[in-house]
Length: 150
Image (cartoon, rainbow, N blue to C red; front, side, top):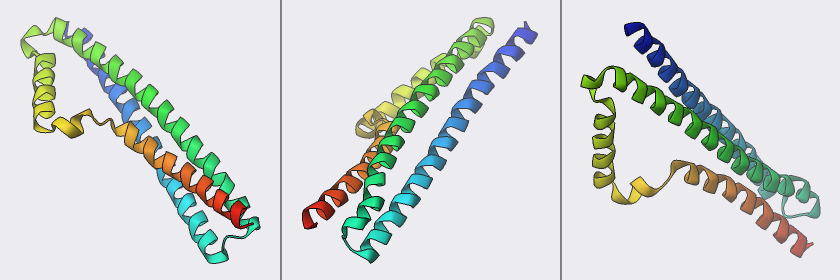
């Protein structure tokens, strides 16, 4: 039985490692997008709102949309890995019932919800998506202003 638990524990850890890697990739991508967007906005501020600056402002829209899609995909994969880890955790608890691992997690979850009732409901990936939407909207707004000023 110890060998089974060792295998399940290793599989559990692998799922969490995969989820952690996805979060690192999401953070890296977001940092890169914010860096590019900041440089584009700074460059546009220096050069002024000339028509040629559409070459800078329009790609911001695509960059923001790409960021949104990537964050959605990272979230989907992360949910998959966390659910797989939960399955392995349940299997471990079935073999070692005295541990009551999942009861502990449930209690912690309930305490967290009570302590932070408003922010608990906010999903972190929604915040990341909002950031990327902001990049897309800033590119679209900047492009619109450039076209209007023509």
